[in-house]
Length: 72
Image (cartoon, rainbow, N blue to C red; front, side):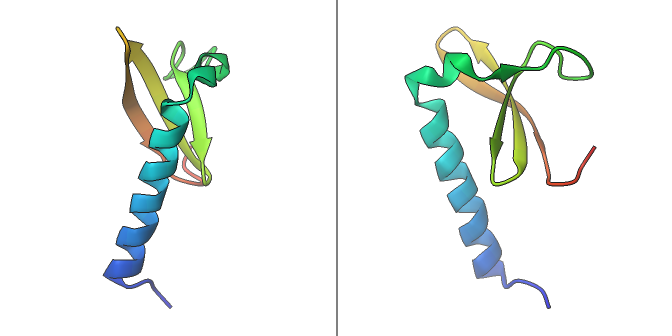
């Protein structure tokens, strides 16, 4: 059984809103930074099992990559 386009859209919007809320949090500077691998040096943020890799450019947080749950 799959999801309707509306359910999928609603879920994606919710993930984006939660991610944005966390990125606007001033405590963000204390998140985990990858030490090795393809995303070494980038901050990692996990929202609903999605892994976001983030780079800070000046005062902006730029999402470099998103890994889906279970993706290597």
